[in-house]
Length: 461
Image (cartoon, rainbow, N blue to C red; front, side, top):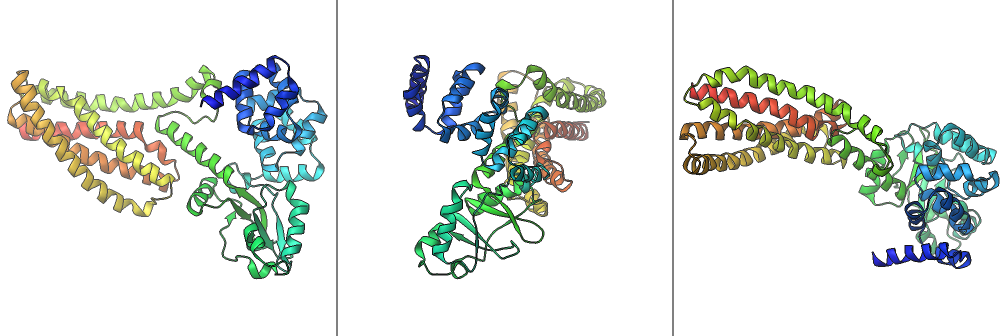
């Protein structure tokens, strides 16, 4: 951390003293992501433009890709056509497409005008894929070999074309119709004889992705198989691009962020918190809070329905029972949230499918029974030892038993509801995260209140 801070301080010092030659030399030893972080954290808009123009040509495009969309937009507006073309020409096409997705129409027009006609055609093709598909993530810049090539000829092609490719470690073997028939790595080529034929050393048992496959499924494939890149094929089996592991990591981060936001009852937003306006944050949060507030009124209606019956018990029993309502509802909500978050995470990682719902429910039933009995016993002891003996409240053994039994059943029911709703949501093609904490808590609150009141009226009347 100290090295990181000292590097930033050194860059600031060189920039303020206008020692641009030394600054350029210092930048050559830094990672593009660190340079981008320095620029966005320490320089204002005008300084960012000046600083970017000082970047060595071989670094400029890499740093530009690492900037946030707001910084990219302000730089593009400040670029001359020549500067913009230089940056775009040095970027991989998938990065260009990602930037275009974030830009307003007038900026997109400038970017497209800065590209060559052939590149523009490819970019437009990539933009036609759905945002959540593999096609939107892929790059068409990969090394393609033919099966009848020798290893020596393959290396000649890699040297000739590899400089403009996203990765050269994995090469893809195609037939004359561009259908993918095998995969070969540079390691395979290095260990083979120069005159050996690619068709004899390539791997024909490979993992591929279809263009319209969901990008979350793509990311899970990377996680499962630990590949650096995976080929993307169309319906005819022709390779149209590749997806690299850095893109898969971005997808996993985006999906995790989205799930966390939905679990917290917030409309997902891909902008950083400090760059999101208060109005936008209000817009993301208010609808969910209104929905939850309205749904929570059902809990109030249930309590109003039973309050008269509980009050009629006499001897202050209704007051004692109502005093335990918050504890009952909170315990049920927390138990349900534990199950829902665990199951939602399992769904996100591909560990759980809808077909596993009965296995999950059976497991949570057993867990719920153990937890329910544990909480019930502790609750009974607390009511007898603390509330009755120390505080003097009239919690008899029967009342304590009713409360503890209700708590046990509430926890069991909450676990089953919490684990099953995310799987049902997935089956209905909804986001399982929607069924996480806030909604589970609201549903379980209503159920726990009905269970509690009915058990109390059944055993105490």
